Length: 87
Image 1: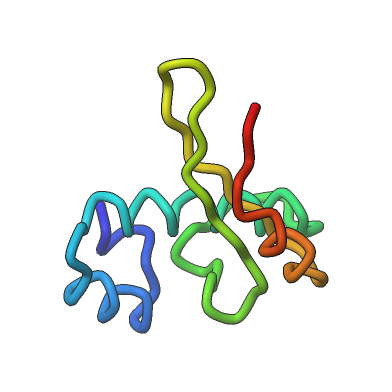
Image 2: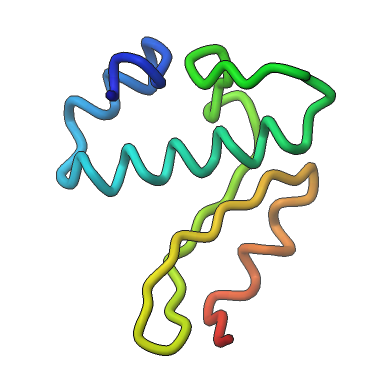
């Protein structure tokens, strides 16, 4: 799956990632939010560069379920300020 959705630079980071599943999940959710923010009509994950876009990801727990929240924004720092997200 990694070879199908990651570009070359992302893939090289993936190869050295301690938790490859977590890395891949984070990149996938970042690519989704970048796409949703764009004007593109077709989703092409390998062409979506998470390293060239401002994204932020955080694991959150709602009840007993854990989720990965990813955001793409020009002003990503305002999301980084909220270290503890409780829902």
